[in-house]
Length: 163
Image (tube, rainbow, N blue to C red; front, side, top):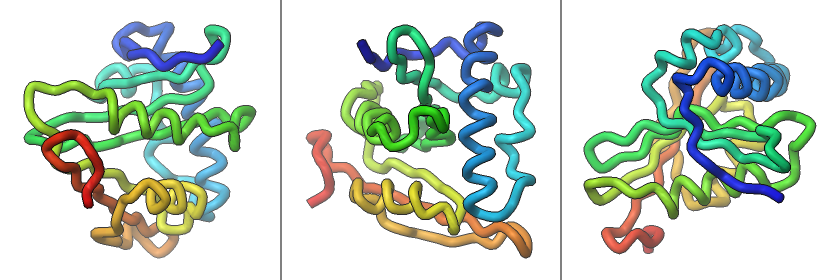
């Protein structure tokens, strides 16, 4: 049985579980983009606990298989992490987590925009975001080896997708 539920990242054991998914997930991304010095690979349990993000986990039979983290501010959802353990790649988990955030996050204010960024060369992530109606809004070259692509998706006031 699978389910998505909020993770209390301040709980040390839960932060350890997230890190056990995050590190292998970002190691694959580092390999794809050809750059291993990405910040999520430097995270520790302590840095996760202090990041200020809200985490949701995708569980199969009580095993954390993927997670998404967000910050919600001024009518925007900013996706900070979308991770899936490599053992569970290509099973639709990233899609389900993305859908969960888009259609189930309740806020005191209307969500107008969802933002996310990924490595320019991370073709699977870029494809996922474009398939889900995100539009490229910027590309930033961080250094000679790394460029980031920024995406946004505008939302209608009724919670539906942009027309």
